[in-house]
Length: 204
Image 1: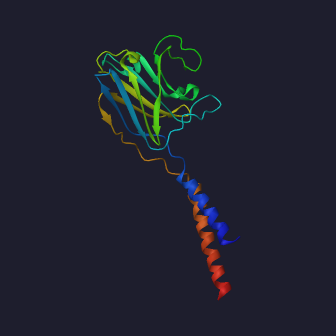
Image 2 (image 1 turned 90 degrees about the vertical axis):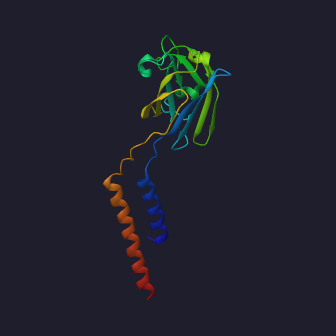
Image 3 (image 1 turned 180 degrees about the vertical axis):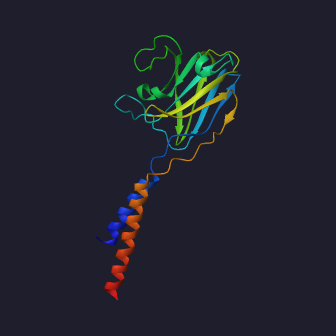
């Protein structure tokens, strides 16, 4: 085995060591426009979210969801009246805003009918969209919400928010790779070292 081949093997080991980067929000906020009666939702993620790839169960590679409580009382995830569904972007390319209750039909995951559907903007890992008051059952722009980020249906983050505020979540460190990955990397480094000694002896 030549040193060049071992180096390629070493690069692959490092890639395995780095592992998969979870989709996590670095920041999220809502901006209330009382003049035009709409709310801008903005999110910045740790990696570029993929809203178009789905698995065999039609779960997006990356998705988000907001539970909106216009009453500002209680826990939005239980008292929300509307749901903003980033997990349906792959279907029509827009972000549906649904009633929490009722029959929503195919792709609704059990949520209610669509009240509105809004376009979104994505620039790299930054995503934003604007929702009218009427779509959220709002009248003054004051509300609370729960926010969730998922990958293939598995929740990566859940948080709370109040209208007009910005949040920067603190995330725990990622889980370390399996010991077998470290062993593989150490073996590759050792092999490079031995081959270099062998090459040196051959030229001396």
